[in-house]
Length: 189
Image (cartoon, rainbow, N blue to C red; front, side):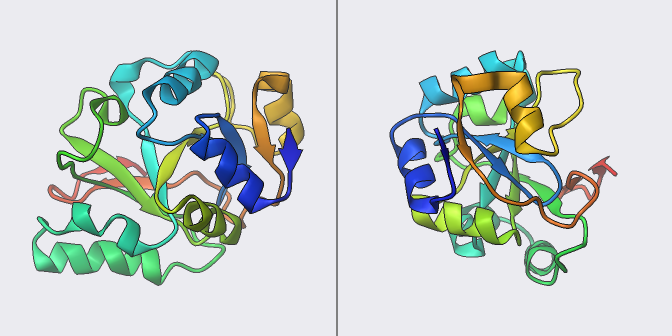
């Protein structure tokens, strides 16, 4: 299915289906992070090992507030500021945050932390809000191949095995940078 309806796309997620959608810089694959079979389908499609973990994408800070509560207050403010003050053409920032008991082990992979990004992409914000929470976000490409930058490229990779929320990419040229919120280490520059 290809749709431009955010409500239809959110319904696909709620029904345990995998969805391809445009993000700030590349196309992503998403699912309900609490649905293990949907998550395993993404890993199968991407040929990605479960040990690597994935990013969670939120439409607003309140959707991931529980993951920020154990951070030092200054770090917490810094994390929120990067999400809140990001211009539409700026590169997004994903933060590695201490995972709490609500985050499924398959989302984290072999890591004690979870990768989280609050997006400024209007379609992604609407999707997360329609889904009523954060979703899985991993690049729409098989492991080792370039990230898809159009619905045509995603379709070439995965064909009719997916549902598609059609729309435009954001204005960023690069996938999000990834920073460990506790150590300050830049994981992906």
